Structure formats: C-alpha cells, structure tokens
Amino acid sequence: MSEPDHYSDEFWEKFARFYNLATKFYLLPFGGEGSFRNEIIKFGQPKAGEQILDVCCGTGTLTMRIAEKVGQQAGVTGIDTSQEMIRIATKKAVKKKLSIKFELASGKSLPFLDNYFDRSFVSLCLHELPNDLRIKVLQEIQRVLKINGYLVVIDFNLSQKLLPRLMIKMFVKFIEKEVAYNFLLKELLGTEIAELGFKLVDKKLILLDMFQLLLFQKS
Image (cartoon, rainbow, N blue to C red):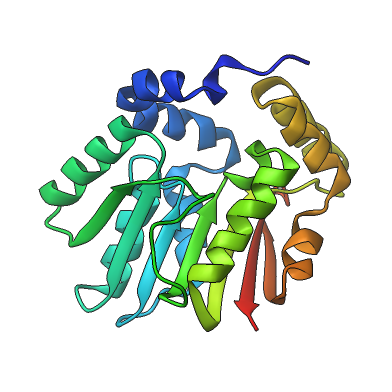
C-alpha cells in the first residue's frame, strides 16, 4: 500500500481551505461532526483556569470548542505543522472573539516549557505517525504536561462488533496509509501511552465503537 498524497505537508497547505467542509463529510457516516466534538469535550473535561494544548489542531474547530467550554479564564493553545491551517484557525477564532493562541509547530519538538500545561488533546492524529515519531510526540506532550496533568486522546478503534469492525477496517485501509492500518490492527495505542508513564483514568468507545476516547494522567 503506497502512502497517500494527503500525508505530505504540501498537500495540507493546499487542502486547508477545504478542510472544514471535508471534515463534516468525513465524520458524517460516524454521527456528524457536532456530535463527535461534543463527545470529546464532555469526555475530556477541560476546566476554567487551566492551560490547555490542542496538538494537531487543524483549522481549530475542536480548539474553539474547548475555549468556548472553559471561557476566558483558561489559556488555550493550538499547534499544527500547516501554516495555512493556523492562518484559518486564527481567523475563525478572531471572528468568534475567542482568546486562543495558535502556533505553527511540530508535535515532535513542542516550543513550550516543561510542566506547563494542565491538559492536552490529541485528536485523530497519532494513527498517522510512524512508530518512532508517534513515541516522540507522546514524549513531548508528557514533557510539557504538569505532574498529574491530563492527556486526552481521540483515535480510531477496532470495534468488536462485526459490521462496525468491517467498516472501520475498510475506511482506514483505503483512506489512511499503511502505518495507520497496521496500528489499528495491533490495538497498541493505550499500551504505548501507558508504557511512557501515563496512567489510564478513563476510556469510552463511541459511534458504534469505531472511535476510542482515552483519558490519561501524567504520574
């Protein structure tokens, strides 16, 4: 299986303007984007007064949901490797009069101090990364999280229900790249994060168990 073009940085710069619409269609078979984002916020429990980081924020839709939930008393930051994504996210936040800091940055080298954030979100990103890069990103998140800080992970799940299992396997196999498909089949996400020193606090399966929400605490 060859790597799809949509994994290149050049693709994301060009695709950013269509990202919001594409995401709506992308999540439509899984219950719709609004329902999906609401589940994440409810599960992730962002709180007023926290410093919160959204890794791989795209055009900032989830980041803005977080900011709306916690109000102006929290410090919300979103990072992405696409300059165009960050530009669009910033424009959307300004339009909604939300105080969010969007930065062009890579998860493998976060430009933040150690033990700075109370909570970090990573949504539908980790499955795309090669093993060594995924571990590096998780280590960086661990570094910038405060002791007892929380990591909220949203990603695909290999459902045990026959039809949803077939659906998610086909979706990942033909839309994502080989590393994502192999990662899905091995079901190692929770184990990898725990091995880095995070404690699993809560887990929830949503949308016919095709997506998993994981809440970890840094020990």
